[in-house]
Amino acid sequence: MAALEKVAEIAVDSGMVWLGDPVYSITPAADQWKEFVEKAIGLGFSEHGVAAFDSADAIGSLGLAVQTGGSDGAFPVYVRRDDDGLVMEVRIVFDA
Image (cartoon, rainbow, N blue to C red; front, side, top):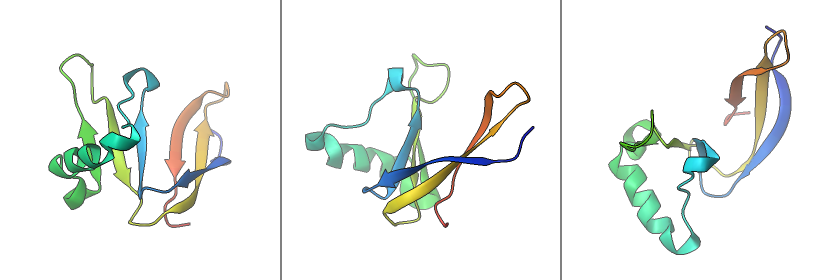
């Protein structure tokens, strides 16, 4: 596999990022933000920094809300590709 390559920086203004398939996107509308954060906290977000949103209809979790370590800003995103150029790993660095 190739080395990590920087592909972007993502802007964060909520202290968290969402990882998941867009078809299952459950990111909240502005008026549902408090409910979303409360659910993340109830799923272990405050203790572990990661909250899995699960569904009986999905193969795995619908997605993860991941804390950035408490800060907002722009965070670099790296990928590692296989020999055919397909993305095999994604890495977001919150302490750059």
